[in-house]
Image (cartoon, rainbow, N blue to C red; front, side, top):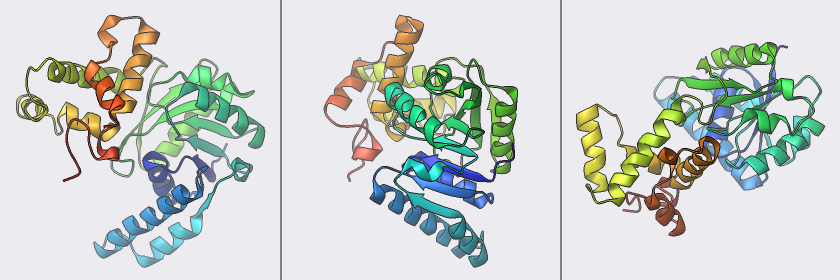
Amino acid sequence: MEIKKVGILGAGTMGAGIAQISAEAGYQVILVDVVADVAANAFKKMQKNWAKAVEKGKKSAEDIEQYNALIAVGTDLDVFAECDMIIEAIIENIDIKKSVFAQLDQVCKPEAILATNTSALSITEIAAATKRPSQVVGMHFFNPVPVMRLVEVIPGTETTEATVQATVDLCKTIKKDPIVAKESPGFIVNRILVPYINEAAIAYQEGVASAEDIDRAMKLGAGMPMGPLALCDLVGIDVVLMICEYYWKEFGDPKYRPSLAFKQKVRAGHLGMKTGKGFFDYSK
């Protein structure tokens, strides 16, 4: 199936980024968020990004005019009725995602592909909430979306090869590098990355070193571009905690037991960059 019109559900950091690069690739884009201001602000942020690109000579005024014409925003799922693919980028909660996919299944045309930007959850379980599991696929982007090249494409148990191929083709059109991964908690990157971040938090919790020194050690000693605790703050400590708890539940292996430091930070409302404080203070 040829994909011409793409719907994005969720206008947060990830959804807005996906909408931006989709428009830049020439797709008609509908960006939906249940909160009208969130969708409107996401569109304004895209326009600011494009304005900066024009100032740097990377894009022309004509490019921006074309992108603006390709994007529409809304708050109702019904506007997805004519979309060829919908990419969900909402809260990382399996029950909420299943409820939303059941609604999308009712609203979207029969041939539409439903993709989820989940970073760890079961594609098969999400797909089971619909009557079209063969057309449900994982499409895991990385933050910041306009910069990071990888998209993990994850078929569920019943996802067809045609659905996977259409998703891979779209990834290439929006200038991403797709890697198809078998369905398993965390897929490839987060399966490896989250336990690494968790171990850093455990070292912090045990007083092995300060957050600053743990991150500095990993940058200087392992060549990491960003320390694990700063990365945790970027992703969101609440998100990392949720993923750790999900791994522990799915695998039943104590090596995935989340650090108490995560729980303490979340209880205090210190979720990382998005709240101004996490392992590091961003309010200064």
